[in-house]
Image (cartoon, rainbow, N blue to C red; front, side):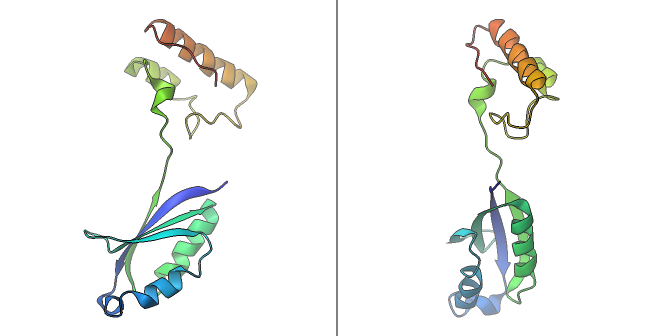
Length: 136
C-alpha cells in the first residue's frame, strides 16, 4: 500500500549556485516523486513521495548518499479522520485505544469480532453523548 511521505532536505551551498539543477536532476529520476518544493525556513527543499514504506526508505537512503545532501528528514503522513471520534470523551478514546486501527476509518485486517467490538463501543459512547453512530 502506498503511503505519502515528505522528504525534507538541507542542501549543500554548492548545489544552490546553479539553481538546484543537480538536485532536480537527481530527484526527477525517482518515479515515486510527486512534487518538489523550495522552502524558506530550516529546510531548503520538500519532496513529496508516494510509495510503499520499503521503497520510500530505500529512495531516502540512496538520496542521502548524494553529495548535495547535508541533512534529510522523512515525515510520514498519517490520515486524520476526526469525524470518526466526534462526541467521544477522553475516557471513551482511552477505552478504544487498543482497538482503533493505525489509520482511523480503515478497518481492513480486523477480525469480525474486533469490528463489532469497536462498533459497539462507539455506539455506546455516542449514545451517551447524543451523537449519531457509524458503522466501521
